[in-house]
Image (cartoon, rainbow, N blue to C red; front, side, top):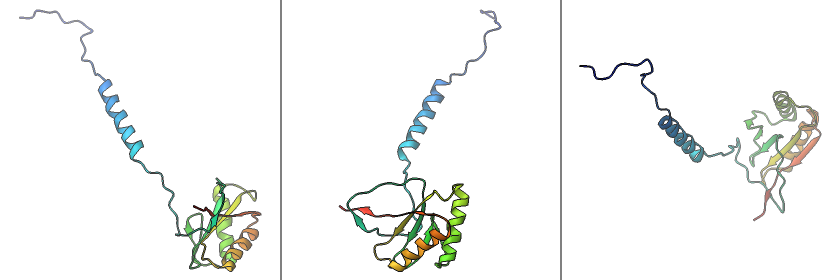
Length: 139
């Protein structure tokens, strides 16, 4: 026995509000639990300074205390001037910028002065004239 006649607009409804609520909670959880850390190729202890200026969009040369060198987080096999210059040239080509790009040398406080000078010579050979030395703010 049929009490009600079927109409053309009697389609099942899908309620999207609970789905949106669950997805919003997941997005908030992921945003809160994500850590934004910058990993380093070499572990260095920078020398102390009184003030700091952050330079974004630069090419970094990291020099460890034992003389290892990394260019933009890639550890180099050889630490001679030509190998560092080739790595810098490849980094400039990969970033798509020219000689106006800033090179930041992040040398360990116990790194030799010769290693820093070698990195500066390599930057000049690669055609990069803007060089900066990184330090950490003293406590």
